[in-house]
Image (spheres, rainbow, N blue to C red):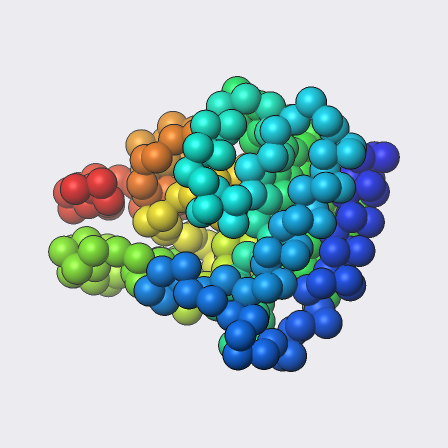
Length: 270
């Protein structure tokens, strides 16, 4: 790991030790809030984002900060996504965290020009850091990692059907699911991307593609030799509001699923 990786890891560890893990399975009723229906946020999310934001601003003052909770409070924060910026998911998998379950993790991405340049995914339970640099490879705790398929036939697919509209879900179940072995999605992108990279799942199909959920993981998977992109194969941009995305252990698996979705008329934006 280079100096920046070490600094970010220490910041994430400190944040996890200080404000995240002390509240894991220890949240009071008035420390969990509903941002929207079935979309909780906890006091730990808010305190984690504040600590990470301060630390990242000190590391690189010229980069804007785009935090999930800040963007929820003020949508104009999203305007920063096209420039040099840090993107923070203070606790990915908040629903799991709030219910006293796993997985969950802290995620940070550095983006410029709408494209992720660096990513850090820290699992405080495992004390595991998945990180990547654009053009520089993917690493787990400093060791290089290469994506691999499961080898299962049919391939293993985790689809985020809970976020699909009813007609999308019906189309998926009828035209796509029969060609795959369906896996249970972990309700945590910070876990789903490593599951694809490490050979546990072959594919993940996403409906929502918010920058704090996907910037870090998509870069990690791509740099590991997998393929994470829009359904048409175009790169994921953090400043796009487009829906739909595939993460695959290999480009061939990506192309197969993308072709099936196109043939079925699956359009997540309609």
